[in-house]
Amino acid sequence: MNILLLGSGGREHAFAWKIQQSKRCSQLFIAPGNEGTSECGKNINIGVNDFEAIKRFSIENNIEMIIVGPEEPLVKGIYDYFESYKASSEGGSWGGLLIAPSAIGAQLEGSKAFSKKFMQRNNIPTAAYAEFTKENYDEGKTYIQQHSLPVVLKADGLAAGKGVVIATTTEDALKAFEEMIIHEQFGEASSKVVIEEYLDGIELSVFVLTDGKDYKIIGHAKDYKRIGVGDTGLNTGGMGCVSPLPFLTDDFLQKIEKEIIQPTIDGLQKENIIYNGFIFFGLIKVDDEPFVIEYNCRMGDPETEVVIPRLKNDLIDLFLSVHNNTLKDKVIEFDERACATIVAVSKGYPGDYEKNKLIEFDDSSIRQFDDSIVFHAGTKMNEAGQVVTNGGRVLTVSSFGREIADGVRLSKEVLNCIYFDGMYFRSDIGYEFEAPNP
Ligand code: AMP
Ligand code: GLY
Image 1 (cartoon, helix red, strand yellow):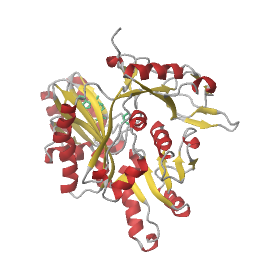
Image 2 (tube, protein in one colour):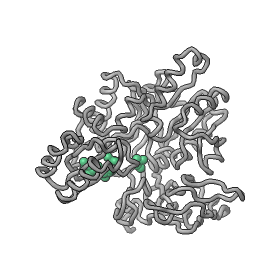
Image 3 (cartoon, helix red, strand yellow):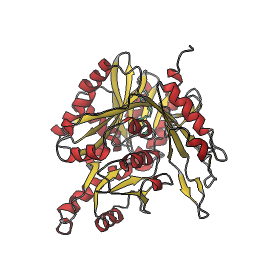
């Protein structure tokens, strides 16, 4: 079948790498893609939010499945757009499938207030919270003044990963609250703010594929969000990831399924929310109890770059099962080895950074690393036919190993065979899981 994948990050390169291995894939297109995805299929110059152009391309190229990588088109309602097209008089001839939640399903990520209410209605453990707008701004200030510290403030809508503030003083919390509500720091996205209790524990992410009735866990991971070694400095989109997590025992996973995943899927069904896609459960383990920190309506980046390499199933087969009611019959198989990924970023990231730096790959050395994969993120080909940087997160190297530490070591060796001006990566990904000295 002809498949169209939307997005241009490391996540999409990992998807493209996996999809091209599927026996069901005849032609893969990626919109807009990056230099890495162009080796797995054909990049096309269409933006992920240009639904009209995506539709036209899909009809002209007989696309039978559209896989949506990033959250923005999901929250903007790409699923509903195509459903209403299919139901319209001119849409009758196009029968493509979308791997995407409906717009309302995507609100699990698109609105923190929506997701908190959903969790409350469905008895899903999460931090206690309240929500405020300009209308009850003064009440919000009182709420903050009476709140224990630290206190967490979250812009309601999508804020490119920057909408969360963990304030350790009441003064900082009040300042952040004013920035978001009064000064409209994130525009419409911060017109509503969720204020919640701080949970102290270990974070982990669990990834589920669902058809809204059944689900399969396709992997889990821990990511490293801060720019600096030792989890210091500014938050980023993610500087590296490891999987599987030694502390995620069968018992704890069962608890997560019983208390969080199953009630979430039951909630979707009860509330008639159409959902044919991924749910990324951002969790925190407090003592021995799991809580939801956030839902995302997509796969994570760079989490996908460790989850997808460990997944042995044919991905397109799994996606088809979401649409033909056979997901429940699928058996998910994992590579037993650990996988670690380390992201190389541009100098200055997550602040301002320059683009168009030449990337030099020592290909003959890299080829010797059979257990590593280089996934591109912010890369492109320049007019002279050279691969150059085109984003903050430039590429990520995923490696298998017997233990997490082995994968990390290999990824670092591969990164030493890649160079661009200002290249930086965290040297301590997976530091908690370092093998004890022999
Ligand atoms: P989010 O965008 O909701 O994932 O939040 C970004 C990060 O803020 C999370 O990955 C956590 O590290 C942290 N965080 C969010 N909510 C809480 C909370 N209630 N307690 C502690 N940390 C939190
Ligand atoms: N790495 C975090 C995310 O994709 O949201």
